[in-house]
Image 1: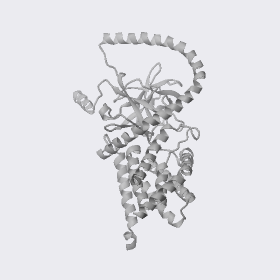
Image 2: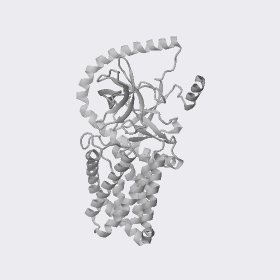
Image 3: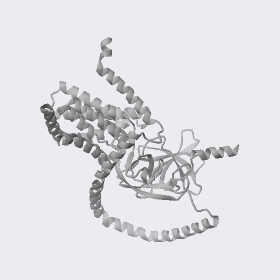
Image 4: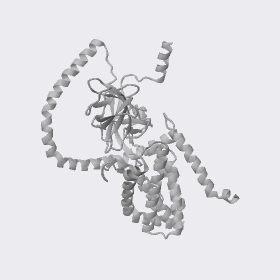
Length: 293
Length: 172
């Protein structure tokens, strides 16, 4: 027995297991900010990574271009047929936009949940362990980024949200991450819009939009966009298209399976959406509660 | 100059892993399969086999910490697993004769064990809800295949480099 406790290695192992559990527990807390050593390490590695990733982007772009050249003829044919339709659509959009602006002036309502300032950022790293789907971008607090801002891919659909900001870099959690805290309020566009929450990503690469009321009629092919409610996400960012609807376990709600509009792989450039309308803070809710009494 | 070589080599492996997942197409091993590179761990195991055990554990500790802070944001997992596997790999080498094949085998076993341990931890802390059978099919086999390919390519340069390093250590 005494020999058992004198075994130095065993004690080291036990102590390090205790430290491991403590550290995991510490990092799983809902943290609004990282500790300064973490930030320092992240900024330093971010600097090195951005040095490396620029030539890497260049090389990857070169091979991408070669591939694009091969497809050009085929794509050109297909696109020509679409261009004609686009002109028609564009005309409509312009008329509607003008209408919308005029009506807004009449109503004296200038800002909407939909307005945001895009800020371009380059991806400088990605989590190689691939359990947490996270990318690192080269803009941080100095560029005015904040936690939970929406991140959009190059085709305009929602990629994820900012998890942590450092001084010169930040981490983005992709929508494909299976994080129960990663819920995003959405609208499913239709004749009558219904609200739901993005919650989870399944094996078949579909997002699950849960908590849709049971009486909402949702069809395949309807678009899902962000609702802009409850936080820093602007309204109307595309999330994806409904491919399947199922009632949930107890039949009180429905779950829609959504094919995401963004490609979660091969991401090079992203845009961070800074909402221009004032973001509500916790104190706002407290104040309004006080008025009610 | 040679003093700087190892940190640069491991730093490069650290960044290459991230670039690798950024640029490889999603369906390299078929649709829906996930493959995670563990090049850094392979390097650490080779270092502790052919270089020195002490350095293997130190590099495992430092780069495990970096990996946790920069990439996963869950502290402790790789910080703990990298030095531990480096330690056991050097222990195993006392029994087995160290050559290219045994070292490659040991590093692959280490990668497999770390991969399963990380799955298990992630299951515990609700990062994933994959069942073990699904995990094996979707993640484990593609990951092992990918790292086997890397180990085959890198085994000889690693051995050469780390044996040179061990010699320099002996001369000092």
